[in-house]
Amino acid sequence: MSSPDKVFEALASTTRRRILAYLSEGPLSAGVVAARFEMSQPAISKHLSILEAADLIWKKREGQFVKYGMKADNLGGTLAKFMQDVCPPSRALKAERRAENEQD
Amino acid sequence: MSSPDKVFEALASTTRRRILAYLSEGPLSAGVVAARFEMSQPAISKHLSILEAADLIWKKREGQFVKYGMKADNLGGTLAKFMQDVCPPSRALKAERRAENEQD
DNA sequence: TAGATATATAACTAATAAGTTAAAAGGTGA
DNA sequence: TCACCTTTTAACTTATTAGTTATATATCTA
Image (cartoon, rainbow over all chains, first blue to last red; front, top):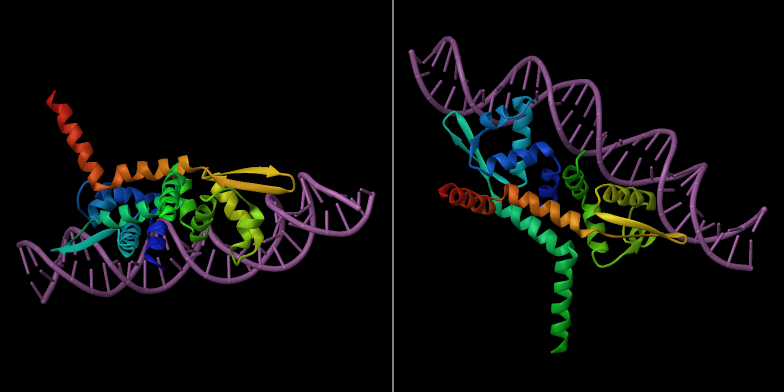
């Protein structure tokens, strides 16, 4: 699975988007993240590993804890690229540029 | 399912993102869209209805054809809002604004 | 080393998603 | 009306996902 595929797949879950929102305020340990949800800790652990596989977060062991944090570049980059590909306003701009270049 | 949920769910499929990319160049009938994929036409019909339910595309019958087209507002709006919520640069800006307001 | 805490993995279940083919519905035109 | 074309819906299969509990692994501390 290529990287944008993994990113969109990861974003498909409301729980995972909530995790990203929490991490966007700063790094947190797995347990602190899990405490904010009503589901089991292993379930959150799996969500975290999916986000990590999509390269949307980083992970670092700190003693007996494991800290997770946002990796915003990939998220922003993937979404920005997608918007450029698909959103008509930017498509129109690209078409303009094409037209200008063809005048040369 | 609330609207952003449906949007992210719809975007989770590579096929549906490709459909959006095609439609971003202009409206197409269901058959023309289906012809660009290697899967059956009913499968594409289902993908189109998921995109429509997410309010990412519109649909209009034209004689015996059914034409589909982009509805970019909802896509752009949902992604922009999400980026604001989650991307640290914009979060930092929001924090700055909060700090400035607290000075008053 | 033993016990406690934090996290990940394994094994499993239930619900959902994505595709298939066959049939129905909507529309055109002789 | 009948034959034909386009699209959707129905019924079904298979694979995947999201959750569960139980267990294993890693680290800290007494």
